[in-house]
Image 1 (cartoon, rainbow, N blue to C red):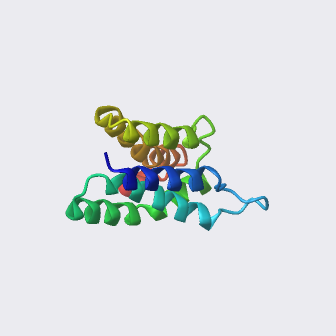
Image 2 (image 1 turned 90 degrees about the horizontal axis):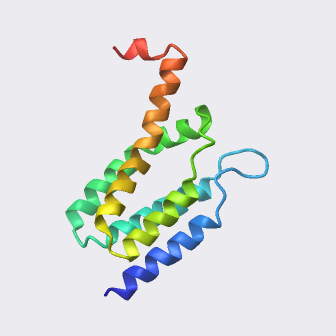
Length: 129
């Protein structure tokens, strides 16, 4: 059991849970972006593969613009992002890879699906055909 990895997952999750996405003035909290990145990096560190880590980090960094558009453009109030992160933490610490992979896939795909729906609802999808 890797206590240092578990400690990192717990610590970064704790910081993420206590960092609001939206500030009191209604603006996007840049601190949340950093806490979110750190939590997902901590989860991935458990794989102990520098190559996989580099690929996933590159993909996550490339998707940052889309995450921001998701927050600005969509109205996804049914989503429980803190709950998703809590379950990801729990599955990872329990070493339940099947559940963690399934949830992570859904977690990652939610924002692009919401943005595609937004584009379709607003007649923006025809420009991509």
